[in-house]
Image 1 (tube, one colour):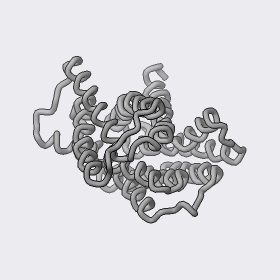
Image 2 (cartoon, helix red, strand yellow):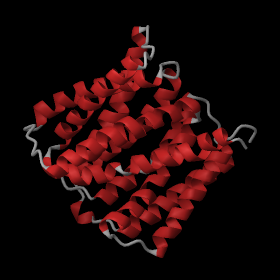
Image 3 (tube, one colour):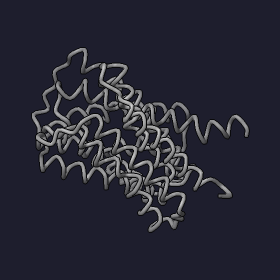
Image 4 (cartoon, helix red, strand yellow):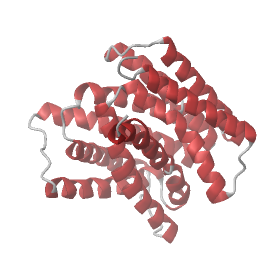
Length: 296
């Protein structure tokens, strides 16, 4: 297997999972100093401006059809606005982060169902087995880290369910309608549409006060550069090149990666049970990748 093929099938997806998982670190550092929609609004405004400049410098082609702008904007609102906004809001009002992760971790299952319905992607026994193994692994990791049900908030649960449905629908929508739009302009349009949505939510529901501490600036810089310019671009690239169900299965690896990062950075415990759950996640994703590989 050529190095470029190995990079596309294994190294790039792993890099995406690592970058995406660090978003929990950014949220942990930044949310104490800004309300969730305000925090996300500032992040998206900066990221969209930077992407616009980069796209102009690189002379990336912008869509010529108004419909393409509309399709890309829908993806942006679903994946970045509703998904991130829902998770950040849920955590900010007291929903346990483990419960949030547990709900959102159902995304690969929902995405595979939607992809079979709208994209005619096959659901093979191997893919079903991989999705089941990955979900079981996530459950083990999340429950081992502990769930505080005393902090369960109905509004937070509802927000996480909307987040789950939004990112699943956004992944399928991106694959079906936005494959012909150049990557940088597409993500720039997504962020711009999301910025408009978030400023409306922030002005109507929040005070928009920000405490510009060192921790907040670090979190903001991390989320803009590493997540918005790194992980999101990789996600859109992976969706354009791959099977929607296969890409979605990568999100099973996010909780294990986040658990390892919390162990390294915050000295949180990492038990043998959690390690077993992580192994199941890896096996599950490998099975889904194998089920969707050419010739399988």
